[in-house]
Length: 104
Length: 84
Image (cartoon, rainbow over all chains, first blue to last red; front, side):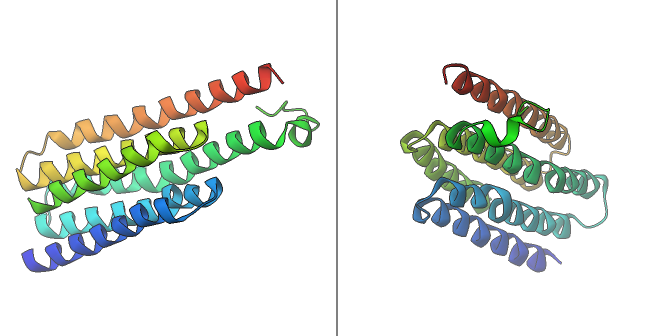
């Protein structure tokens, strides 16, 4: 059980390495945004699943599970907010402002 | 225990990328990435040192990081649109 947990943790770290690599390789801002939205989230969740496997059934792994669920909800939202804000401020406001929300 | 050091190295990479990011949005993106990384670091340290109460701090930090990011994004959005 301990070894299995360590293996999953290493896999999570490999995903994060891809994220760090992607951050430097992608030239466009929106591509870099992909790192935050998907690669980093996957790395974090794999890492935490490895920690849960290491700790078995206890309140500790219950809390880590809660953090995983929180990540699943928050990270895509964060990426969407940044993408929308960046798009609005760079490409101009006229597309979004006519549907009544005023771009907000 | 080795994971904590590797995570610190990744965080350092993200900091460098945030500082040199061309636009302000890269910096916002970098800030969000670093806050995610800090949370993972707290969870990793809590699991290796068997301290259960640290996880509550990671939880709170995740929520605060998210909320602060929303308001920063809207603040920058209003500021850039203001002088348009």
